[in-house]
Image (cartoon, rainbow, N blue to C red):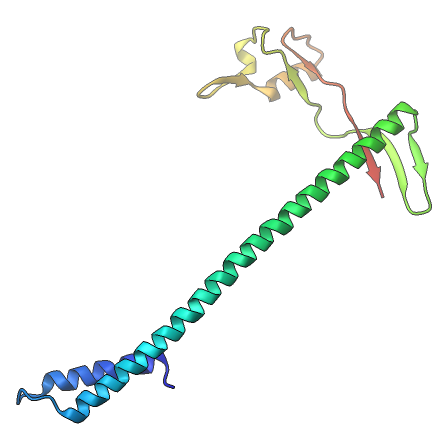
Length: 168
């Protein structure tokens, strides 16, 4: 069967030929050929639509499966984090800083990175420690700089570092 583009070209050519006939009568052979090509085009379009429908259904099924797998991955990550938190809590309560098993080395250590800042929402905050946007919010970089320099701020303190469990 010819491609949809071949059918398109043939139909355009046949229509042009039929329009060019001057005598007002339609050549029965050309008309039969035009009808046959239009039928072929309809069959081709039907096949295209069938394939498009199947591909769209497959795409939707794959999107749903991807979401299902992503949800399973997120659930596994939450379970792993809860188990990690339990180990960290047990190590902290039993005052265990290090443990080595046959497969793993565990170490309880203070978290790195910048310390979290706790801002008291009820204590007035000087303007120099504020960022002005649509709403007033604390300028954590200015507050951190002041706290690191030893300034005592009534509205903010550095939070104690949390602990993380490192598994290698």
